[in-house]
Image (cartoon, rainbow, N blue to C red; front, side, top):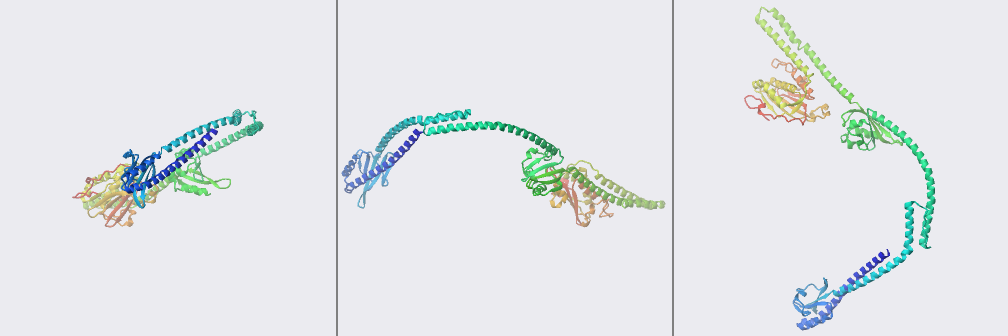
Length: 635
């Protein structure tokens, strides 16, 4: 350590000395050359003034007394070389052009330019070039002296350290060895040997006294440890028994919670899952271990702004909440939820217990019951209408048959009258047959169990146009079609739906029929609330004609069974066609409305569920259009 300190001090001192000498000697050399240049320039004024080169040369040769001067020359006022030193100097050793006045270092030389001035007249310029070899020689000498001094200092430090090592270092090393033995072997009976009465002797006494105290304390600690080990063993046994009891109780509680058929969950104030029972794995479709400690919205982001999260937050405020019917957005099940605030010992709510009783079966049964009640009401209403028909529409043909049968018996001898009465009897019987067939067709829709498939409505329309080809040609009807979609439906019922609509449009018209069919996405404003709740997309089909129409106030009656808004001989029918259309659309979870005005035609709006993933529809071609005498409109 002593040698390192001495060496560093010497190096720093020498470095500072060298730096100082280097800087000061350079400045001294520069000032010395400047003084020499000033004297020489003053002596050269007469030589330049009288243009005596010999005098100038002699003055420059006087510089040989300065051993460091390696070159000197004089330029006249035009910058031409006037005289130089030494005589054999080469042109490349002197500057070809003059530079700014002053002195500067360049490599191993100090150079300078001094103007020669007499009065205010510039006569020329003196150039001096001095070698720095003397400076470097001096520094080499200084370096040699410094090296000798450093070596001698290191030798002195070495002998001094050797002397001090026996007095200071060895006793310290002895203490270190004893401390190592105590640390590794835990033997506090060892003692260090005291050799002097100085500070190291005091340190040795203190070290030995410390070991004595540690040895006494260690004996006391061992005695206490023996007693403490007995207490720890006893306490450990008690804790093990308590833990076993607690574990058994926790296991029993978990068994009870996991055995519950209801969902049980506990949330903390940050809405993180704390506890979940076994049924949560089935309901949430996530292992409950993955949910514990996570925020409910991190796991189920779809619950944001939901009633479930709102009830959790209310319950965190201390409110008990009973949600009788909640449809889960996670599992699509129905639950009766109870939100119970849980408080700590300070009566501050820090948890919320959620108990969810699965009422999906009950809810679906209630919905099924509502549906059955609705169907029953519709059936009762249809039954009432049927009763009315049975008492009126069906009795009327029977009454006519009976009446004309009695008249026929009385006119057996009058063939023409008898023939007319028999014709009326046949007409009434035909009317009664049509009514019975219509009732049977309507009743079959309620028992339709056919499977729904992908139905291309363009193909359905094409087949209907083909079937009604004669009627279309007879009335010179114009059919305007746009591309229709593919829907999930029962093909036979879709054919019946559009066949009834086409038949009505061809029947209830006084001029050339124009029938237009187009489709587009249904707007939310057009759909009733019950259809908005199931989040299903719907397609809207517009079926319009230019027929005789009817008053809009009778639009609700248009779809009632056996309702005929134009019950005249000119427009016959059973009054069941539009009722069939309504029932077909409702069988496909859709609905149908109508807009009409007398003399301006009728438009039916059909709304059916639509799925974008279904196969694309067949494009409408001119062959699928129909018109009389001219090509059909194609859009």
